[in-house]
Image (tube, rainbow, N blue to C red; front, side):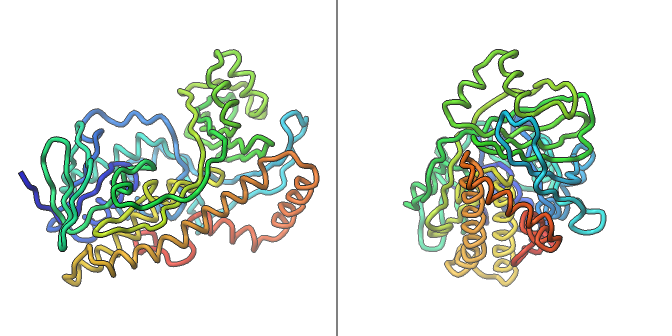
Length: 404
């Protein structure tokens, strides 16, 4: 059995679902989209993590009619402080702080629990007529022909379209089949993620403590809760998450401190290996890589998810413009426009996060003195701070219309 569609999307995460909803908003009911992911169609998402949604990505979700579903349960990031110290230092002086709005009344970011945003995207996609193919279904491979591409599912069902978007994660099988190499390296670090409750209100403040092992980020959630992204050498990270409650609390308190009163880890803890990898090409024959299938970067600036959202917004614009003119949405010139748009931004952000991690994840006194001097200079120049805020919000360069 062969099903016909205009676009197939392999992967039902933020980037894949965002792309599907964006194109339905742009092109309407006449444009047929199938999203294939094993977890679709089952119970609500159980993803316990939270993500920082930059202002540009928030605008995208608002234009898609999704943000209203999660706005009341999102936490604005009202300001951010950056410190640089050793683990045992009694005082962690603030070297750099960011505050204010991108535009009047618009914070530069929000924290949202992943499960809420994913469920809102699934609901919106279904309401717009996106076909959600889940409950164990996946695109295991594809067959490419001159004017079409066919996704092959393990069930034996084939889906044919003009374009296949691979949003199937960092271990993308579709990228591998296309022979597109990933270039990069492992950091030998892992990011520990969990949620903590604290006695005092965080007042919307995010904190990034640069410690010799790597950054320790405290990101505000609704209520008196915060999400942690805690970087350690990989062996140490595995030791820490394997501790009993008392041992884990002791390690946590060393890094978190007592500025928010008593603290308690309340979410599941997990460690994820950190790496930087960028695909040699973001496109193949009638194939476009989106999100983690195209790039993985260090979480030091919280930009991984936001890069994937910018991929979705840019690809939706390229496809919508071609479809609106009656052109082939999988043609080489359409895909090359997407690649030119996204690859430079991705490489730039990847190198920036890599440089920051290498600069701060060490304990050399001379380097520490130089970087703290640099942070102090940025703190004294409001124009420089505004530049970094705009970069982090995804509102520089050529901004996709759904993020404007």
